Image 1 (cartoon, rainbow, N blue to C red):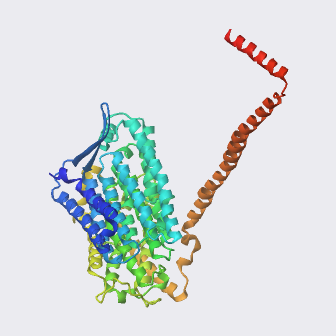
Image 2 (cartoon, one colour):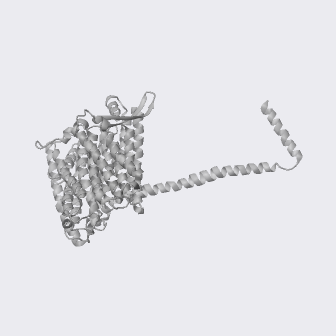
Image 3 (cartoon, helix red, strand yellow):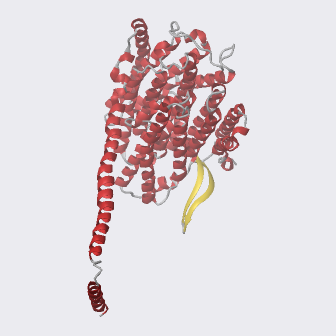
Length: 627
């Protein structure tokens, strides 16, 4: 029965987006938000029904249509739901629904409200299409829909040039990864003669395939995943993506696009398991990015840029887990991260509104007394981001990833980068929290239109409350593997599809858990000391130019890539356009015709004897040719 309703899950938000587009002004603005929210809610309920009826073995499948048929070769498009896609669908629909619900009062009477909900729906539909696809063609279609929506939503306030630039930058950088992924899909078809994912994995496991070809496919997929998930050095688009509404950032960072790269590699884990060397590089890129993103976040003063670099860092932990074969832990952290990052981003929208749209945390303070509800829910998200021991979900996912990375090749390096990143994460998380909610207000409060006499409207309270509970309690469904007590539910269930995480020495695992806990708690204390000094002296870590500029990586890439591209276009303009085309081709043809016309004109002497001679010579040559 459930096989027959799979198509409804991505279709509901897609249909809602189409209705908002086609009917346009005929739908009241307030009704557009309700329509968009209800479509995602019904899709989420259907996903919940899949959990209740999760008797699929090994998956649900629904064939949609035959896209291409040539002789005995067919490309059938269909939807497939197994345990991995079901988890990702749950994150997309339920977190997406809470973001939609929060948006209804948050975006009311804002610029482009109807357009906003249209693209928000289309974004969710694209992600669902991506994770439910049973073949690479439909997967890539969902991948590209998300790229379009991210560009449109980041540039939502297009009346400012900087916002348009930010959307364009995100589109161009991710387009590099999209192109390489497309090449990888073409190579996959050349090697396996099919685009069906199940058939590809079956062939890879049962038939000898040139490891160089498999390695090339994995590298191309990795490049696409790095660009979409903002891993170093493709991360430069994500801090710029803060130009749109904060709720857009929540959807991009928590429920859709940024997690797509993690899913892509996890979905193709069969191929990556065949090439351990490439998998190690996945782990190293992730571990380094986790470290790099945390060092950048610690020195940011813009609240949304702190959260952006935080996302870069947290996705890095997921890549580190993927690279060491801990695919289950990577997906577990995706779920945990979705809760606390969505909570922090949607809350950041209210915080920014409360300070007259100022993003600088150094100008905030004292908000805890003004909005106590937001204070406590934001604290739950902050604590989970910092991975405080036992009481937060991230402790059970992120610390387990650090332990998993320690057992492989150069495990000390991977785990070391992860631990240092964890220390910086705890510091910047609570620096942000203390600067916003503690102390006295350093700027006057404003009164956003959605803020009533009782504080936040019920939609906002409900969304933040559910996400705060998730940020704390989801970890309690999966205690560390070496703990003999407590629930061990999520990983064993997912391991049936993705395989088991690497087995780590229990003593080493315990040492890393204790170290991670001490680091997280120490980070809170360090942040408290730093904030007190920063408020008192007016100078702090945010004045560190190197870290605040994110190691100047963006500037270096602009100098090398952007200016290099401009130089190449100028060179091509001189060599190809002006010289080869204009002077050699166009000028040469013009000169040849001109010279030829001059030569023939010299023969026009107006003397009959010359004309007779030329006719005679021509006739003789013609006779020789015929003979």
